[in-house]
Structures are given as structure tokens and as C-alpha cells.
Figure (cartoon, rainbow, N blue to C red):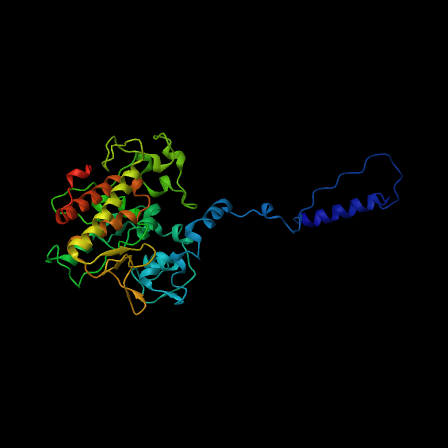
Length: 389
């Protein structure tokens, strides 16, 4: 009834404006102001075209931040690696495709676990990967070390995909019952995988590194209580580090400048630089020591090339050039148990670019112990290095 009344009212006002009285007779001219019409019952919106800033999109700022992050970059190696094959193996799709992640955890209604089929290429870490309403059902994540780590819904995706694909236990199993310094053709490089921050943060408890017998290792690096999770320090959409959070306790917002102790771990005596410098110095020393061991003890010089898998190659004649066979580089093939352990730990430290924040003590322990073990075979004067653990 209300729309009808409104239409009748408008008709009446039209008649009055034309000079007719409500009774139907011609109204006399008057100087009274014209009556104000009621607001129409329905108002059509303005039509376009609109400028982008005029279009309101829910969560537009967050979407824009995500679109500029590595998680959305379909051209990145992490997501485009399988473009040539046209499909992603199920075991890889768990973390390199949003659809694969949801399938692995059964969030799409499928059975939990690695699927029995590949996934289409082109997927990324999309909104539904981290905002799926069923993420709360994930209460623990199985790690390569064999333990199950309890997680909250905000950590489930991070812990699933940044845990790596190997552990110290993987190396220990591979070298079991082998002579420490005898090359064994059955041994191959063990890769902890890439961007493994979720598990390096757990330290010795997570077990990603090889732990030498008789040594103890720091557990989870418990930062200040308010920054105990991934999203405490990383914007979940842009992935950028919230430097303002660092400034709550530290004098610098740049994580590379922050030092955690008044101890020189690399033997330089310099405690004014950030702890990252100590970790990198010890990692560089470890790399030099493992290359020396490969040439002098294992008997085959080694070349490291971080740009291509499996990263460590043979240089049998020691000319500084990677050996070739049928036009292809020859992977290093003189692995000994001692060498494999040290190389693996070196790669663990290098596979987390932020390990100086996520767990600096664990990184220092792994490099220290690996250098010490290699030195026992190469004859390097370990004490003279002045390292601290």
C-alpha cells in the first residue's frame, strides 16, 4: 500500500503544480512556496563508469598486500616449477597449490592425506588456504622427525609448509652402520628443502638438524611472549616483518642488526654486529671445512653450486670445474657419513634465511658441532678457531 500512496501523492503534487486544486478546480495563483515532495520509496544508484578507488571491495587492502607477496606469485619457482609437465605431483601440491593443501588436510571433503592424483598447475597460496573455516580442525602437524607438534588454526598452514622434508633422523638412518670416513656409493645428498623456518624455530625439539651424539641442543626459541607465533612478526598477507614489533624491546627494527648475547661466537671478538653475522661467518667456515674434507679425506674435490640441484658436484681432477658426463654435471658421489652429516647441517642453516631470528642458538650449535667433527678428521686446529657454542 505504501508505494501506491506514494504514487498517488506524486500525482496529486503534479496536478497542483499544473494549477489545479485538490478538488479538481483551477487554483488561483499564489505566492506561497511550492510544497516539498516526499522522498521516493526507491532510489536508483549512480551509474558508472567508476574509478577504481570508488569501488568498495571487502578486504581490499589485505588482498592488495597478498597480491604483492610471494604467496600469490604464480610465476615464482615455487608454483611454476611444474608448468612444463602440466600437473603437480600430489606430494608437492600439498604446499605448492592451495587445492593440494586443502586436499591433504581433508578441508575440501576428501580423505585426509596425500591424494592419489596430481593437481593442476597455476595454483598459489590463496585466501582459502589460510582462511578456510575448517582450519580449526587441524590440531597437530606431523614433522619429518616423527613427532607431532600441536598447532592453532593460525599456525596450521605455516607449520605444514615450512617444516622441510627431511630431519636429522633421515641422515642418521642413511648412514647407519657405515664407517665414518669411507665413501659409500649408496649415500646421496639429503636436502632439508627450502624456507624451513617453522621447524628451525622448534630447534632440537623439532629435530630438523643432525644432532651429534653426546651433544645437547636448544629447543624452541621462545621469543618474548607476545611474539610467539609466525604472525606475531610477519604480516600474514604481505609477509613483511613488523619492524615496529622488534623496536618494542630492541634498539633496531632491522633483525640483521640485533644481537642476542655479549659473546663472540665466530671467534672475531666483535660483539657490536648482529648475531646474523656470527652465524654466517661460522656457516662460511663450515663450508670451507667440508670442501677441505671432501678433497683430503673423501678423496674427491667437491664444488658447491647453489643455483642447481643437487647443489654439490664432483671435481675429480681438482681443476675447479664441475665434471661433466654426457653433457650433464656429475653430482658428488664420494659421500662419507661424516661429510653427509656436516653438509646436511650446513644446508639446514642456509635453508632458513631468517634463522638468526627464528632460532640463532640452534644455528650456532649445528655449525659449531659440524666444524668440530670435520676438524677431527682433517687435522684442523679447532681450538685455534676460537669459536663459541
